[in-house]
Length: 139
Image (cartoon, rainbow, N blue to C red; front, side, top):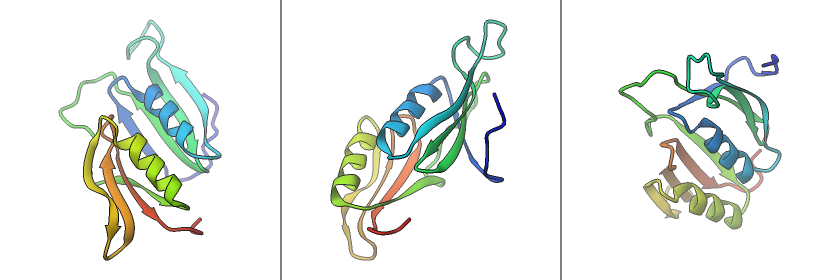
């Protein structure tokens, strides 16, 4: 994979065989998003052939690293770390909430919370935690 990472510090998401599926979902949800580079395990391993050995994707300019771990771990994602999204419109936050919470877990339902306004917190079907807030004009 070419060296294309432009950020000195980056978030890395470790999946158990679902990295490419998750990446494809995420880049479909955010404007100006793409899979920048992807490398798959071959038949020689160490991971399962065809799964993501390493990949770089971008969500609206924010880069993430990801891979499918070849080692089984006793841990996964935790809500203690989440991806925080400032949404520009009701339509955006409603759509993200609907899609990302499907087959996931709602930690705080989408609602107008007195202290922050329209907000939600969910763990998606892969276990990745997302917090979303309606904040028009925040870039």
